[in-house]
Amino acid sequence: MAARAVISELKNHMTPMDDLRIVFYRGASGQTILAQDYRQLDPAGKMAMAVDVGGISLSIIVGGRERLAPFLSLGSLAEMIPQLEAAGDRLGAGKPALIRSGVLDEDPGLYLLFDPHDDDDVHVSLLAIHGIGNFFPVPPGSRDAKAIYRYVASHRDDCIEAAREWYDLTRLRMNKSTLLAAFPREAEIGRAVLTERSIAI
Image (cartoon, rainbow, N blue to C red; front, side, top):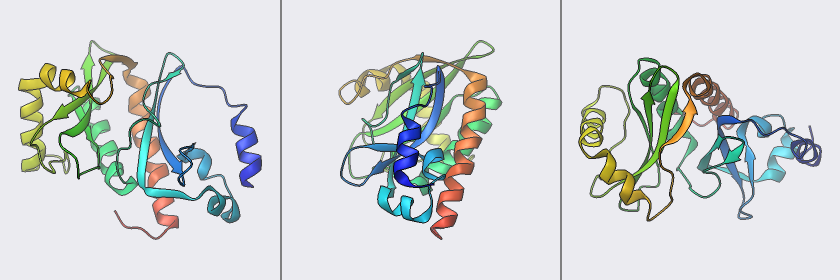
């Protein structure tokens, strides 16, 4: 499908009430395209989009309103995919899940926290952690992952408050089943895009 046709089709998309989706930036324009829509493009259309998988964001829709993309870059697609998969596993087990921004040349480190409450309610917050270095919450069970989860368990409120200097994303309520569907779906889409570009994870 040609780029112009997809862009026209996107204007008619119904915005979901709640969802999480990978978003690509289109060159230096500041405009974005959903990863799932990028995949529908033919080779010429993809080239015209000029997306950089080295810097992506996540679209977080709550109550039909975009709450994150394109305001916060979260680093590369290759770094995001295993985090989405691990977050889905943790949330499915009723545990809090973290996704770290892959922008590593800034302090503090920024994380998204998906904190389960009740049976089907998840609070989503942005965290800022100073002096954390390049700790990622993956691979699951690694020393770094255990350390960052222990730290957040003890300092969650302070980290949420510190993040407001960058962007105020505090305890958004999302449906757990929506996130459990979104994490593996978006990871699969991301893997397909990287496979097309012969980029290993």
